[in-house]
Image (cartoon, rainbow, N blue to C red; front, side, top):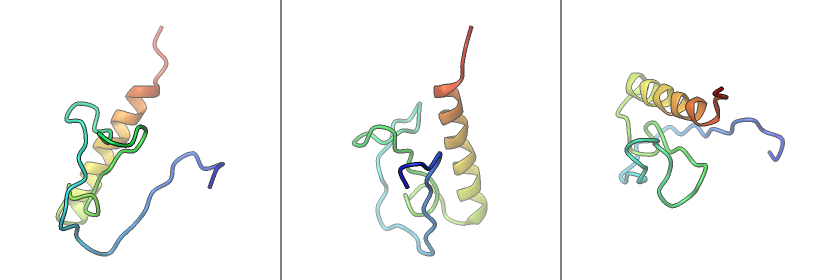
Length: 69
């Protein structure tokens, strides 16, 4: 797993808790570099909303590492 570009976990259950994340960059407040998203992290309630939240997190990750001149 040390060579992974992106690591994601799929769960088949809803989360009774919500992992806290920064409202602007969507990064975890307690673990740097972690982007909790989707149903397992408490930010979605189904496959469509989980996909949308995953896209939002992916866009934030891209923006963070995007090269600007």
